[in-house]
Image 1 (cartoon, rainbow, N blue to C red):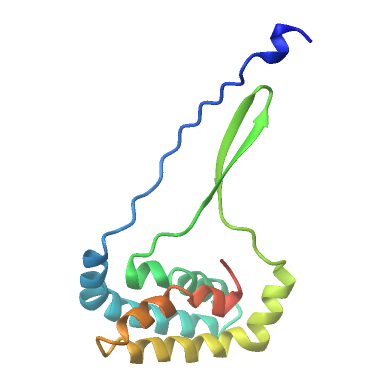
Image 2: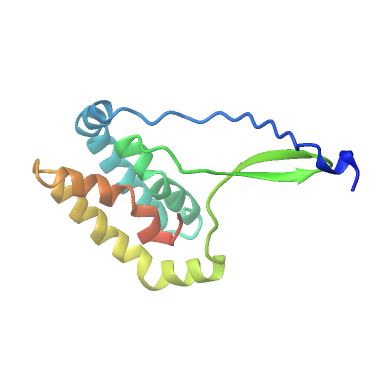
Amino acid sequence: MSTADLSPIRVDVSMSSTREVPLLLRLLWFFFVGLPVGWAATLIAWCASVTIIGLPLGIWILNRLPQIMTLKQPELQVKAIPRGGFYHVTQQSPDQLPLIIRLLWFLAAGWWLSGVWMTLAFALSASIIGIPFAFWMFNRVPRVLFLTE
């Protein structure tokens, strides 16, 4: 074994991440902006979802409902892939179920269950005790709607 085989491997990884919005700011946003704008976004998304042409726009809006209502930042995964002696660092969204499964879920249950889910979340947001549950529910609308992470 040569000394070249024993040399340490040097890996330099530089990454930036978005900071989470402070909870107090998220609460203020939720009450003064998130609820009315989120309600309007929900109505627009549901009206768009009625038509085949508007369905992609409706799903796009509903998938962003957590950010609209609570300033929740999308979750990203970071992977380091070795290439030619260097590591290529990429950010990507979490792995998703196959599209056909997500489409079948949307058609069978996601479209109506997400409506019930959001109605319950809006109702919970009317009380101080229900606000944490409403946050939790609004952040999970994409999962209920289309099984996305």
